[in-house]
Image 1 (cartoon, rainbow, N blue to C red):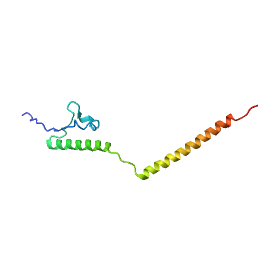
Image 2 (cartoon, helix red, strand yellow):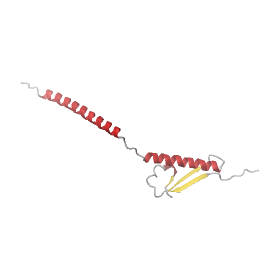
Image 3 (cartoon, helix red, strand yellow):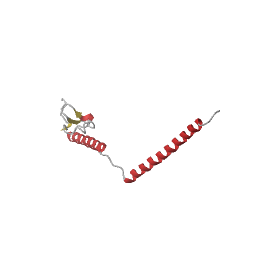
Image 4 (cartoon, helix red, strand yellow):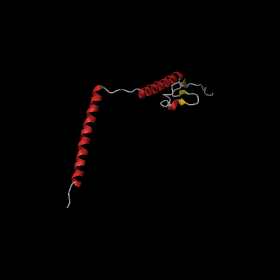
Length: 113
């Protein structure tokens, strides 16, 4: 007896022509010719399991892409801390610059007769 073959793949196709901002993050699944996403799974012999696998892949892809686009603004405390660091760095830089300047002046102000 021959084995019976059937298609148990789970396939997902979605047109994303309008969402050009996300196409770079969908790279492994993006089909440029049709401007769509194409995800398949044949991990299991069960079509329902494969569909669940495709939906899990889609969820991971969308969540990861959305997370990379969301920017979190710094808190007021963080902003103040950065300003303090910048002021301290500027003061340190000024001190070092003055020391180098004084060293150069001391070398050039020697009056040799």
